[in-house]
Image (cartoon, rainbow, N blue to C red; front, side):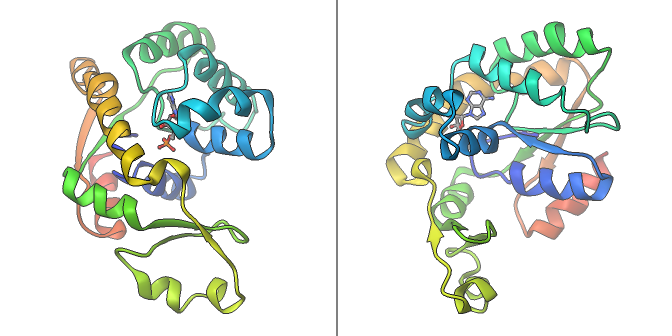
Length: 210
Ligand code: AMP
């Protein structure tokens, strides 16, 4: 899954994973879990993440390699937010895919205007108790009517979803990740998806494109 911050990579990746019964592996999710569990990787990644910068390639490559050894990826897997640099893409191809005898089937590039993603990100919240994602900007009624709210559960905003950090993440995306679009186009793997509209609409487009 390729796309800017807030394009919907995580949401759509998880849905695709459920549909095909394969894991959706989000490197950002893995780093957030590592921070929560106070691991060595989490400690190394936190400063970069909070500043909206990329975690160094060596650390990213290591967690991806480790994750793919889990044994649950035999029928396939979805990567969300990885690779994010040309360096990661090349190392992934040579040191991981080729070594494991695997190849990518498709790269889904989810395209959304900056205006739309800024709004999405500003409303994005996660329930601390249940882990369910809500969007207070786009669908406040879902939260208002939720079981989580009734139970008095709390919402949390990601540190890097605050406005100034979001700007930095966009800069980093433009500079480091956008070149991957051309890279995968040349390899014939790129599928461009219009990422605006509802979650269901975008999901339908993805299924058509696959
Ligand atoms: P995400 O959840 O995909 O938005 O990622 C959140 C943050 O985790 C990013 O802003 C980076 O700091 C870090 N991160 C996630 N994936 C990568 C990656 N492939 N390369 C470098 N940093 C990453």
